[in-house]
Image (cartoon, rainbow over all chains, first blue to last red; front, side, top):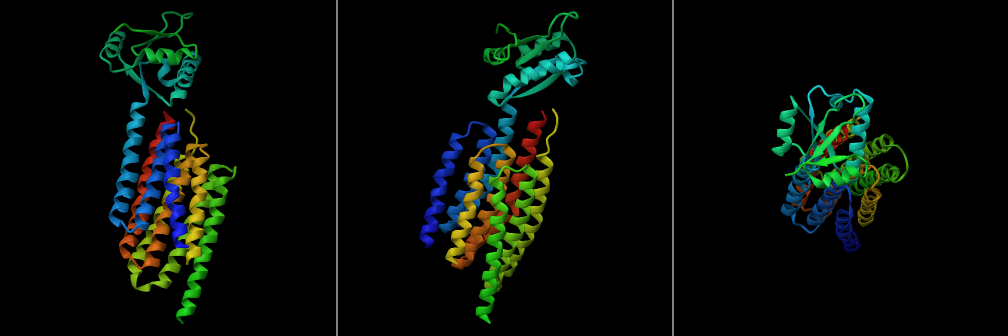
Length: 173
Length: 93
Length: 83
């Protein structure tokens, strides 16, 4: 009887491992990695390897998923440089809100976030784009009828945003 | 006397397993997240504590370890319930 | 005692199935939290069954420190939704 239970528990390990591999969303995959770590710790403990189980529980589950969550969160994002005092920063005008919404919708399928960075004037904004501090910048419309201008240095971001019919110019390197 | 204690520990195990099953079943249903969180935290904490008391009756000589587990279970599981409920509230962008 | 082990393993499979359904990330987190508690209790039961206190200590440590990672992860995911 105990062998049967042990067999069932051991079979859970490849099952959870395949669940980790088949996840699309990186955050879901991280949580599943935690589940895999707990099941693995359980199996190690059942086989009598207390030290391995403790290491798996503390390092493999606790530390690694927390570090990975922070790493994924900071790398899967688009930094957008805007001018200080722009309505985009606090989404105060309708046009700014719609623009932010469309950019977020364009980034959503890739599980990316939008991060805003404020710069004092247009020269600093362009310099930030050149110095690779931001991925793209947003230039204010010149007059009432004009639209915001998006300039990016990453061609892939242009194709992503083009699916939301957002026009995005690619700056020459 | 020993048989009585063993019987009582079996009763505690049965209560614990029933609590676990009762609390984990809503996880598969189509209810709101807070309902699931509530039933899970109540049943996991109480069911696990009941199983631990059953274990404590069986092996009283290892009581410090099991009492530590009981206390940490009671504190951390309720705290985790609060933290998860606080974090899973939907906030407008 | 063997029946108890079997029932505990059965309840272990329920949150795993809930995690497999992958809907909301918070439901997966709930399943993970429930699974973490259940595995440590299972380890404790087995340690009593075998009278092996080395594994018992692992179960107690997983119970007392394992939830901290879950709280940190919950806060990271919450910050993610706010931005």
